[in-house]
Image (cartoon, rainbow, N blue to C red; front, side):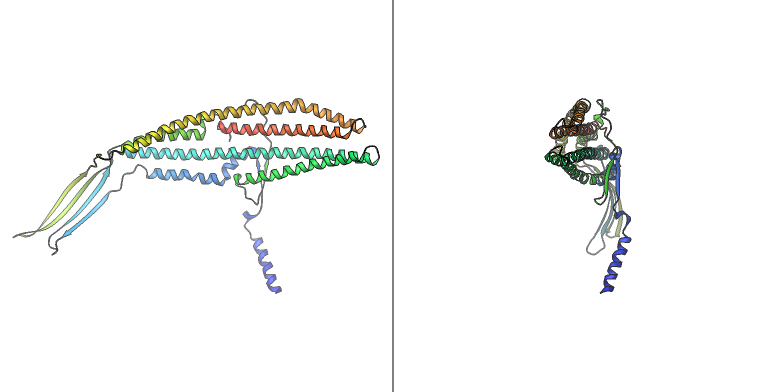
Length: 412
């Protein structure tokens, strides 16, 4: 029994030692400035999306090619196998319209559309990843703020406990100070659970394994009232809409070209063996050429022409609708940026200094016995709310900035 247990332990140890290195947990640190490039490089969904380009290129290789020629063989004999005919034919279809050229044009536009679809997928993915990174950095700042406030609350609690022990203040004040310190610590733990949720959302987007730890490093860029202007017309989805509109018009020409089907031109050779009395068997070779012309009597492809015409009109309207939507998206994001920047600036530069000054005065007054603890705690609560409001306004500004950059195709 010992031998079996020892063998099992040795086997488990060897397997653990020889595990592939890539299965071990590792720490992934991504600077905020590199979040976009890291996402494009490592996101598995984007890697799969890029194969659409290769698919479109494959269709382009096969587009606009003539149909393969046809080789025909014919053999006929009578029941005595004396007389008969043997024939060989070679047929090739030739388009009499620009159909093949139009097919090549449409396939080339499909390649362009596939490339733009990938760029659009990257733009959307970045627009989802960067807000999570901003929220994570903002959450870390909130946690640091709660920790500083908790440290101050603990000092106040210790001070109140000392005075209560000396009989200078009520024991209820000391207990209240301790409750306030614990409350701030609890808020910090709640922020930690939010951080875990954000990391769970961010890891798959960055291509980080669930066993790895992830950290977003760096700081958010400074707020500005005049963000860099991008060109919304260069957005991949807008360019894709224009390409699809252009391709839809080419589809109309392609549908019209199908009114005349391909003509078939063929060459044939026949060798006939026949009884020619009284001369006997006569062998006669025949050479010929044949042409087959489909006539557009019943089907002129009118239905497809109508369909493609309607599709082209719809594509043009969709392009205009998208442009209208993008312009409003840009304006809304820019207005939000301005509003949050003003809110953060007014709170940080005007209101917060007054509250900090008032809080310091109240704490000194409390230490000298000139005010009660409840007033001090209320002032600290106001200070915490204002400092948190500044961080929230800064966070919301950067979230609006990301929307603005994504709307103007300036988010990388």
